[in-house]
Amino acid sequence: MKTKGLGLRTYTIIYLIVLYAPIIILPLFAFNDATTVAFPLSGFTTKWFAEMMGDVNLRKALVNSLIVSLSTAVIATALGILAARSAVRYSWPGKGIVMGSIMVPLVLPEMIVAMSLLVLLLAMGVKLSLFTIILGHVLICMPFAVAILSSAFQSLDKSLEEAALDLGETGWSTFRLIVLPLVMPGILSSFLITFTISIDEFIIANFLGGGEPVLSVFVFTAFRFPSTVPPVLALGTMLVAFSILLLTIAEYFRRRGVAKAGGKDTGGFL
Amino acid sequence: MTTSDEKPVMIEFRDVHKYYGDYHALRGINGTIKAGEFFSLLGPSGCGKTTLLRTIAGFEDLSSGVVMIDGKSMKGVPANVRPTNMVFQSYAIFPHMSVAENVAFGLRRDPRSKAEKAAAVEEALAMVGLKGYGGRAAHALSGGQRQRVALARALILKPKVLLLDEPLSALDKKMREHMQVELIKLQRQVGITFILVTHDQEEALVMSDRIAVMFEGEIAQLADPETLYRRPNSKKVADFIGTMNFVPATITGESGGRIEVEAKGLGPVSLTADQAPPPRGEDPVIGLRPETLTLLYPGQTTEGRTVDGVIDEVIYFGDMTYYDVYLGGTDVEVRLSMRNVPGRPILDVGSKVQVAWSPDALVLFR
Image (tube, rainbow over all chains, first blue to last red; front, side):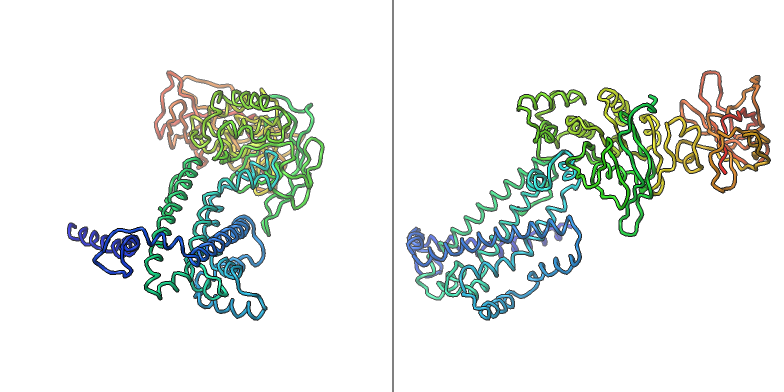
């Protein structure tokens, strides 16, 4: 038993190192006073952060990315709410096929999605822009939004809605007063997941961007020139910090929501 | 129990049918529920009692027929404007609100001032014995408390009809019996028509002014509890309500409103028409309740009729003892119940006994 436990423990430690070591490398070299990414470290500096802040192209890419990811998260989550609600509460002809086709992009290679969208959009004469990236991102984010929101709607007791109707509320006010607050943790999750998927997506952004750089495309390009690598590492460090902050906030609200509703915590993302 | 004949009609079902696809859930329900009545829909699960309750609330569309509430057809009237409120089986307490917010939920469209509403909430909570619980989180309540909140939330709107969907089924036995009495008292206090759905025949007998017994989407019998118990109109109803012994019988004659019957083990007996519900073309059987049979102890005599028997089984219940007895040297076995009063020993299996019975207590199903 003891050796078996030791083996599993070793495996776990190696697994965690492989998973997190690269992410720890990131801030290490972001604060390193050298243009080349190599050991030994040469000294502490924050100049890469300053350089990053001063880079006009990077700032533009960042703004573009935020536009794309926020729009994608809002649209995919809003559409996801409608689809999930309809799929969970009502039955209508062709539901299986429709819900199935929403989930298909999950298993479709992104390359295929990107190429076919590009061909279609060009054929339709649509000018490539941030908008076309958003279109593609909504498509690939919908399955995640629908899956998360479906389970949120599923765990909602139908008699709660009936009780609200019974007490004089209309369908819409019932949705606003009862359904929405109770599925809010699911909506937040969906928003965060779709935002995260969108912000680091590369293939579709590269294909459908039409020269409008977003972060992922900018970072990929920057790595071709050694001089631009350290500022990109600084950017990466800030993104990691931002992600951790975002997830912490989301988890805080999720736990508070669960506690407020008196439910049993079945574990969120953290 | 009140006599409800002179009270006005509150609910009327007119040939109500409900289909779920091919499944015929309600098969021509007719009947009336009077204002101020404590009415129960009683039946096994799947008999359509909850569906019928939900047609009153407005949660189920009818396939055909009409539900009238207080003289108005409810056709096309949505749940949120019907003069009914419901206590759900799961209580449906809004988990993200406090007790007071739950109770005040139905008052959102009420034009009264905030202070008046708060007073109404306090009053409703006091009525169900939850004075001072307004600030508590809804999810921190026990089952019994949740149910009281659900009651207060429904009653604060002063509905014409309060609908209760198996409200006591989630409570333990002690709490259930306690709440039964509280609900009866509450109904008397507010005077609102209560309609209770239950599968527990005892609960229905204890609480109701009248009961509709339902089987497979139909009302089998609609009567007050005593009639239902003493004069069930079919073998099925008799079997569902309490314990009923069935003894094979043959009809030997019928004249002058009396029916002559030869009951196996009991011998010839003459019944009034009142003791024989309308025939259904089944093999005739005599039904008799355990408590209408009495074991005669040595030295006891009766002016009524008696039959010899042999005890086959003894079931001790504390306050009562049930005996399964073979009657008159036949293979007809009946169960009878004896109160365990001082000086009355528990008899042994195999004892030869005399069983006293009364022809008035019999019911003939045919």
